[in-house]
Amino acid sequence: MGGDGSENSLLNQMLTNTQSFVEKAAQLILDSNYTCAFTGAGISAESGIPPFRGEGGLWSKYNPEVLEMNFFFAHPLASWTVIKEIFYNFFTGVSPNHAHLALADWEHKGYLQSLITQNIDQLHFKAGNKEVYSFHGNSSQLICISCHQSVEATPNLLSVLPPLCNICGCVLKPDFIFFGEGIPEEAYRQSVKAAQKSQLFFIIGTSGEVSPANQIPVIAKESGAVIIEINKDKSLYTNRISDFFIQGKAGDILPEINQFILQTKAKTL
Ligand SMILES: [Zn+2]
Image (cartoon, rainbow, N blue to C red; front, side, top):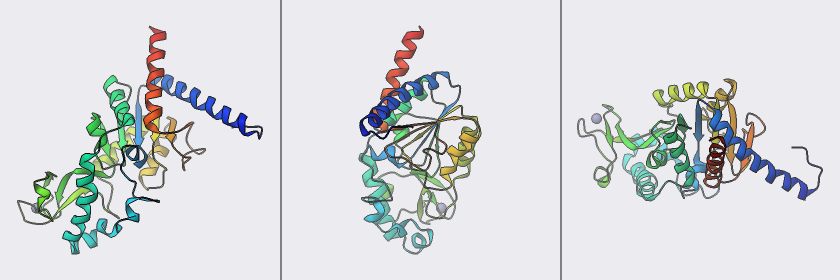
C-alpha cells in the first residue's frame, strides 16, 4: 500500500481495499476448483473460547504442565481435573459462529473442498463441515495410553476422574496433542496434500506462530495457491505469503464474501 502520509486517505484506501478484496475473494472462490481453509484460535475466540497464549489466555489462568506428557503420567487426576474444566465443561456449551457456519455452507455448496484446523473444539464439525483435518487432534475422542483403544468422551465417562480404559484399565488421554507430541499422521498427510492441491487457500484467525502447523499455508503458497488472509491483526503471513489481507473478524467478513458470491452468481445467470 502506497499512502501519501495523510491518515484519512490511508483509512479510505484501507476501507476500499477491504471491500474490493472481499469482492475479489468471492470471484476467486467461484473460479477455483480446489479451495481449502486453514483456521486457528481466532475463529473460535469469536465463539467465546479463550486462546491459550497471550493476555487473558488459558495459560495465564492454568498451568500448562497439565498438558505435558510427563506430568500427565505422574499426576493423571490433577491433569484431568483441569483438562475437564477447560476442554469438556466449557467447550460443550459453545456454539459455532457466523464464520464457522459460512465455511460449512461453502463446503455444502461445493465452494470449499477441505478445511484444516488447529482447533480442538469441534466447532467446524458442529457447524456441519465434513472434510475437516484436525491438525492437533480433537477433544471428542479419548485414547488409551496403553492399548490405544479410542472411545467417545461422554459426560458419563468423565463423571469419575481420571477416566479409565474398559479393556486394560489404564488412563485415557484426550485425543488432542499434548506439548511435544507429534502431529497425528493422517491429519498431517491430508493437510499437506490439501495445501498442495489448493488453487485458493484461506488463512483464517491464525497468527502463524505455532509450528509445524504454520508451514501448511507456506506449502499452499509454494504450490501456486492464491492466499487470502482474514485476521483481526497482521500476522506472520501478512506481507509474506498472503496475496490479500482482509482485516477484521471472520464472523463479519465470511458472510460478506457470501453476499458477493450470491451477487456475482445472480449477474452471471
Ligand atoms: Zn486400554
